[in-house]
Image (cartoon, rainbow, N blue to C red; front, side, top):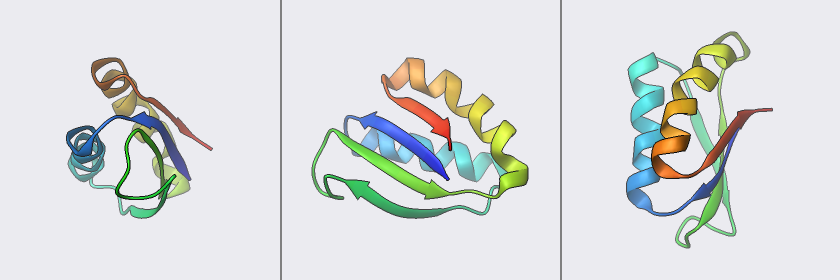
Length: 73
């Protein structure tokens, strides 16, 4: 499970999806808190366990750029 906290807007959310797409990761957006239409939000994605290291590495750079906190749980 990937948790991305502090997603400020739809552009930041799209950057997460784009990064996962570039990695070729088979992911699924599970939910967002407080909900999908309000920002800032925390988004949760299912990612394969064997991709966890690659996902964390890719999102580390994006975290600094977009100001969110990403971690694989």
